[in-house]
Image (cartoon, rainbow, N blue to C red):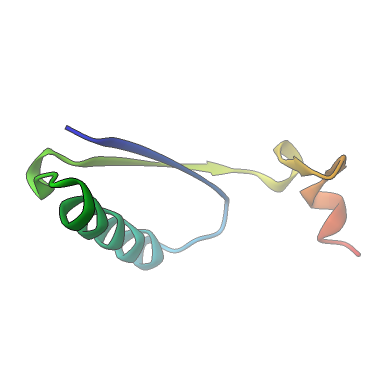
Amino acid sequence: MPHVTIELLAGRTEEQKAAVSRAVTEALQAHAGASPASTSIVFRDVAKENWAAGGELMSVKAKD
């Protein structure tokens, strides 16, 4: 029973998340033999001011 957590910067649409969940579920079925019914996925939207990369907040990078 795979459980996948995906963290993304906030702003993806429901349609985008649905497409990602289908693709991840299909990949787990094809490559790990996981049943789609037993696969769960959680999306965690993270605000840009709560995510840093390279020592800089993403909210600051977005302003550059």
